[in-house]
Length: 118
Image (cartoon, rainbow, N blue to C red; front, top):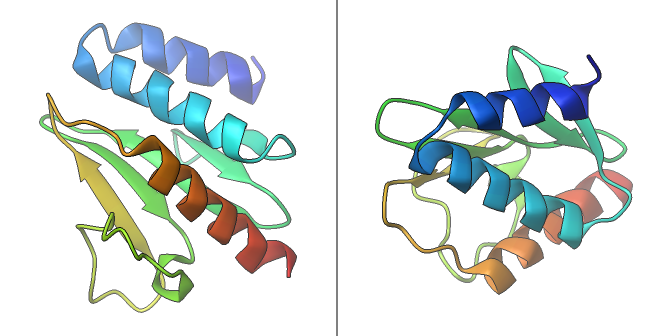
């Protein structure tokens, strides 16, 4: 299977809110950068554009959106809520019932892509 099919399979396997959240995050990532590439690394969905941008993982009580260069990104909307002391990465943990600030998240994704491209 190609990476997109593996991501589809992961979403289908998670027949609860986590699968729905991953599907929503995926839509936002793809909408934020039409040139972003879907990959499958470390048994998880990963997106890249001239370097790694972000990954998404499902855990028992959370869906984690990890930005590989998150420490370098502006976060005016204070989306990052995990790994704030890490030297490179930053993440956003989503819990059941959380809403997604779609506009702010797209801006963050675009900033992560710009970090790689520029």
